Length: 86
Image (cartoon, rainbow, N blue to C red; front, side):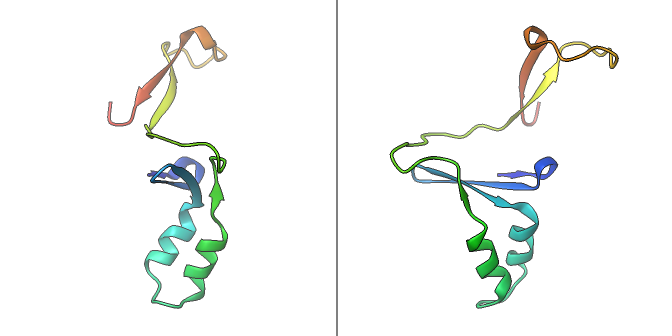
């Protein structure tokens, strides 16, 4: 799952959740076998779940305020999660 705003690419494989820099994923996708970009991608992996933890599902969303007034500060009681695609 790509999250361009944070330059992250999340991978949910079996019960593990990992993060990679999105720009490195793009560079490695254009590389040929054995290229340094592929090795660099592997070295940039950051595991987001611990070995004893199991991640069962992943859902993308974004936090948005219920008000359109840009002068207001974020109020947690008025913040909702909007699913990607809504």
